[in-house]
Length: 255
Ligand code: NDP
Image (cartoon, rainbow, N blue to C red; front, side, top):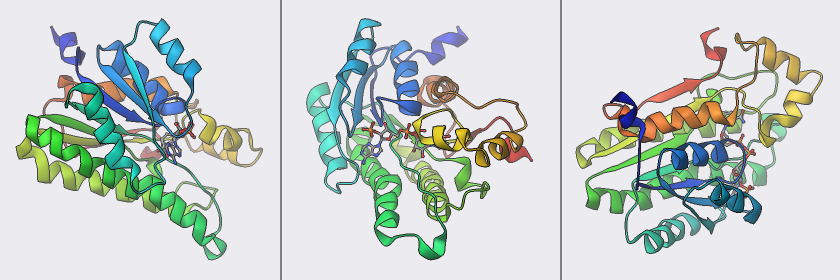
C-alpha cells in the first residue's frame, strides 16, 4: 500500500525547536506516523510534552541551547544514550530571525544568528553522521527558508537570508557526500508560516499586507503544512529523494 511508505513505526527521530511553531508541527506529524520522537528546545515546556503524551505519542525531551557550541554533540550523545544508540531521523528546525539594516546590524546579533541558524546545524549534522554511517541509514531534514532563495521584502534581513542559503547548500553538500552511506539529506524552504516568529510581521500594518500580497495563495501557511512535508521527506515515501530543497510557500517564489 502506498500509504505504508509514509509510516515510520519504531523509528527514532530527534527534532530541535520542537515544542512550538513549525518544530511542534513536525513532531506531531512524525509521532502520528509511528516514530518515537526526542523533542529538544532551549526552554522546556512540560505542558507541551504532557499534551503529546496524552495524545498517545511516544516522546522524550532533552533541553539544549543551540547557541552553545558544545550543545549539538551533547544533544546527539544524550539522544543516543536514551535510544540505545539509534538515530534514524534528525530534524534541524531551531532557528531565529532578526531584521535590520545591514550598515548598522549589531555584531553580537549577527554572531548569535549565525551560531544558531548555521553553526549549530552544521555541528548537529556532523554529530549525527557517526551513528547514521554505522547504521548505514538515516535521514536529515534541515529547515531553510524562501529567504535562502529570494530576498523577500519589505524587511531588510541580509544576515538571516545568508544563514538560510548556507543551510540549503550544506544540505546539498551532505546529500552528495553521504548518499553512498545510506543517508538522505533534504531541506524545506517555508514561505510565511503562522508562528511566534511571524506573528509581529503579520500583524504589522505595512509588512503584513505586503507579505500576503506577495503570496499568490490567499493565506498564510501553518505548522501542519510543514509537518506533512516533513513526514514525506523523513519517511520511505521519499526514498529516492536527496539534496532537495522543497519550497512550501503558497507560490511566493513562483512570482
Ligand atoms: P518560532 O520562533 O516560532 O520557534 C523557534 C524555535 O526555535 C523554538 O522552538 C525555539 O525554542 C527554537 N530555538 C530558538 N533559539 C534556540 C536556541 N538558542 N536553542 C535551541 N532552540 C532554539 O519559529 P518558527 O517555528 O516559525 O521557525 C522554525 C524554523 O523555521 C526556523 O529555523 C525558521 O527560521 C524557519 N522558518 C520559519 C518561517 C516562518 O514563516 N515561520 C519561514 C521560513 C523558515 P524555544 O521555545 O526553546 O525558544
